[in-house]
Image 1 (cartoon, rainbow, N blue to C red):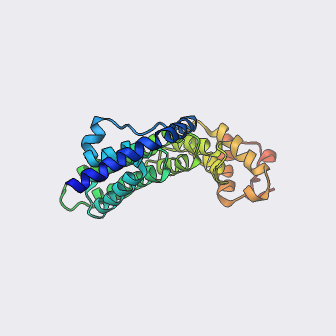
Image 2: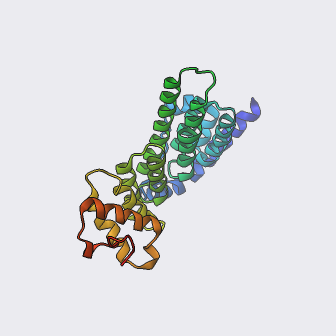
Image 3: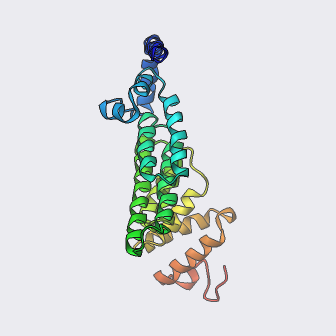
Length: 255
């Protein structure tokens, strides 16, 4: 106990020395949308007094890394409630680390959701499906909170778009997420294309989707991929585009 107390005192002293430096860093973080860790009583109760004092002393990253190891162990043991709790703590401590939001979403939205469908302890299929969908919503929540804490980074908007497309078949939501990712400086080359694909799957959005798809087509050969051509053909048929204006002529071949 004396050794632990000495370590905590040392951390507090070190934190006091770092305070002026951390203030300037904090100002920079705020300018970059950093919302900061909520170092309050609920967090103290969740992570324990020692870890809480360490976080106060500027060791948020260290504590978050330790908790991520615990979360990985909980994931391996399919302790899903503990995984949720730990990643809520981790992302509170390090809201600007996109990897933690992505990990929480993947563990819950993919792994826990799949495990729920195969839960041999639950004989009723309807309840297994219900539990799986609840886990998927938790995964979605991690990604949506992650994008709110990192609105200047494309990675989590990208992952949100994929999650909404793949797991929830929310094509409108996927279009919006991919569009936000595509508008950011660190966007990947395919996000604009995926946004157009997803919009083309939204009923009532055919004209808008066709305009986006046609715009991509007009950018030249690198964009003229098989999926783009197939989506264009489907939109031209739905919108009754004049044959002489189509990318595909009635014979089914590109002009």
